[in-house]
Image (cartoon, rainbow, N blue to C red; front, top):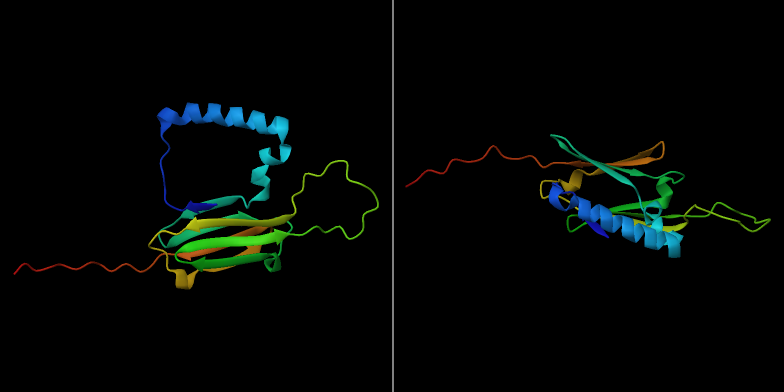
Length: 147
């Protein structure tokens, strides 16, 4: 699923309706398929900040290392993907319940036009992946003389 870093203001008049729909669907999925209700646990939870010089995108990556992740930019789309591998080497019994998710994941964001894709940097630290998206240098503009 691809998201956009573009800022959008919520439409407050329709917010109660969406909350009601969310409640309805959450109730349905919890009753029939608990895995579907917990889809957010299978994605990378994200925070996006904008500053004067660029954007900062932070992803929660508990238990993952840089070897488990892949970051790429193509056609102005930032894509972060990877795989959570089961750390269990030997099973001595059957799980009664597991709430951990193992498997592949991906998050994609369409980048704003002012992102300098050549200077994007990423670092992982303390369970967070931080991607810095610097803005391009903007020209001061140009005055056009009328002839």
